[in-house]
Each structure stands twice: as structure tokens, then as C-alpha cells.
Amino acid sequence: MSTTYTVTGMTCGHCVASVKEEVGEVPGVTAVDVDLVSGRVSITGAADDSLVRAAIKEAGYQVA
Image 1 (cartoon, rainbow, N blue to C red):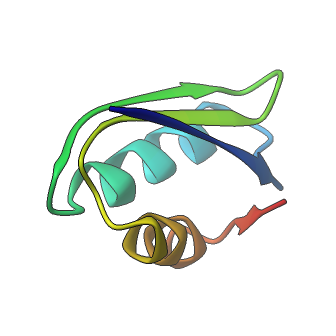
Image 2: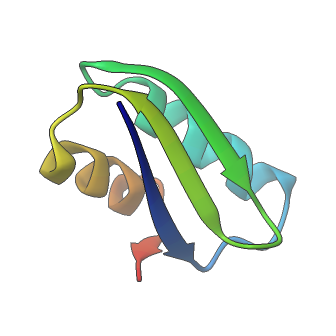
């Protein structure tokens, strides 16, 4: 299962790494792909949507 989120506020490689790290720790997430230019975060796995959104927020960014 794959889900894509649009995330606002990411401006650099460090932002990408932070989001990947936080979202990657969510139970059920098997892969995370972050596209800085489009602001898209795609996850693979059966993760709870609210936990993914909370992880993005924990990294310091907002889901649009």
C-alpha cells in the first residue's frame, strides 16, 4: 500500500532527512520517499494515517 502526502515548509536536504527519519520510525512504514521540489512524501506500508501525520509534524512540518 502506498500513500502520498503534500508537506509544506521543507526547504533543504536536512528537511528531507528529518522527515524521512521521523516517518520511517512509524510502525508499518516500510519505505519513505521525499521529493523536496514537489513537497511530496510517499510512504509504502500499512501505517496509521494519524501516526504518519504526527511524525511529519514532529519533524517540524505541516501536511497540506
